[in-house]
Image (cartoon, rainbow, N blue to C red):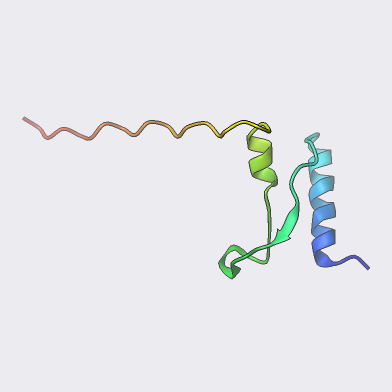
Length: 68
């Protein structure tokens, strides 16, 4: 019998394969209970090509001017 963590990892791999996405990421236990019991870095790995920095955040809007 696989551990629950191993079952989650298999489900993640199956889901990524079904979506024709690369098998990236792993399931690990969360370090803080407020984030749940397990976590994966798959979304971050899919959003950013390997070896590249994430894109910069969008510029902040200019402050509103007071009416004259």
